Length: 479
Image (cartoon, rainbow, N blue to C red; front, top):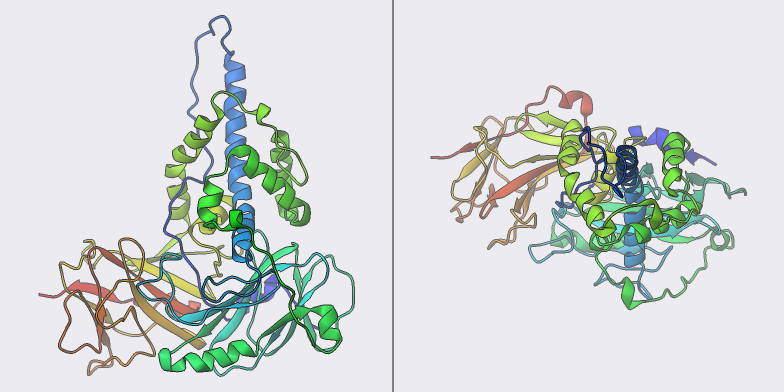
C-alpha cells in the first residue's frame, strides 16, 4: 500500500482554478491608535474602548480564519442538495461523483471566469464512517484528481490508474493490496477531476472515461465492488448560492457554524497560537459564540468590519502576486496555504479549487503593452514569440472574458485559443492571435472580444524553471 501526502503534490501534474471575481474585505481591521479625552459620566473609559476595539479586531481575525471552512461547508450543502445525481444542476448526494458533460459557453453564468479547457467531475465526501475508494481508470489524455481538505488546502493530486482510498487520517484499519491510501485530516473532503476535452467531437471519449470512474465505500470495494449508491435528500432552504449564503450570515450564525464544523474538521497543529487567541471570544471546536462579547450596534459594526477591510485585503492580494511581463498570477503558497490565513480566505472567496503553481498557472492581464486598458474599440495582436514552457502532458490556453467576468458571446462560439486550436503560425514559427469585436476574413487566429475585456493565459503543468526566462506574449494595438 502506498500513502499519498502533501509532499508529493509538488511533483505531480494538475490543472484548474475556478476563480470568482468578487473582491470582499477579509483582512484584519486596523483601527488607528489615538488618545481620547476623559469620558463623560456613563461613557466607557479609554481602556474599555480599547478593549472593545481589540475584541472587534479579534472578531475580524476569526472571520478570516474560519471563512474557508464555512464556505466549503456551504458549497458542500448546496452541491449535495439532491435525491440523486442531477446533470442539469450539477449536483449529487454526498460520497457520489457528479460529472460535467460539456464545456461552458456564453450562456454559462454559474461561476465567473469559467474554464473552457476541461470537463469536470467532482465529489463531496463525508469520511466519518469509513474510507471512500476512488477507482481511477486508464486514460489517453490529461486527466487527474485533486483532493482537498475542509480548509481548502490541497492534500494530493493523482493521475495514475488505480484504486485510491480517501481516508480520514485518524482511521485505523487495513486496506487491500494495491489500494493507495490518501490521508485527509478532516472528515469533510472534496475532489475535482479534470479531463481535457478537444471540441464537441471529443465529448463521447470524455464521457467514456467518466463512466469508468467509480466511487464506493471501502466495505463495498472489499466485497467485490457491487454497489448501488443510496438516495440523497433535498431541502428547499439549501437551494442557495454558497458565496451569497455565507456573506449574508451574521456573527452568531457564522461563528457557531464554524465551531460546529471544527469538531470534525479540526484546525491544523500549526494553527495552535491562532486557535488559542480566538478561544478568547469563544471561537473554536465545539464552543458557543456569545454575542455578549461584542458591543454597540452589532449589525452595523459587523457590516462596517467587512467594508473597512478592503484596503488591507487588496494589499494582501498584491503581496502574493507575481508579475511576468504584462501578466500576473497568484504565487505560492497558493493551494497549500499553511498559516497564511488571509491569503487562504482571499482565494476561497474568489473561487474554491486552487492549485499549487507547479500544477497550474492562471496569468491575467487587462492592459496592452503600453499599459492602456483592453477594449473592443481597438483591434489587437497578441504575439507569442515562443509558447509557454510545459512539462510532459501539459497544455495552455488563452481565454477572453467581458467586464462581467463571463465568456463573450460571439458568432462563431469561440471563447479561447489553445495549443489544440487550428491556428496559423507565422513563417518564423511565432503566433499572432487577433483580438477584435468585428469578424475577420481569416478567422483561424481570431479570438472575439467585446466591450472592456481581459484575458487569462492558463498554463497547465508549467516548466517552472524554464518559465523564469520565458518571454510571455505581448499585446499591441494594430493600426
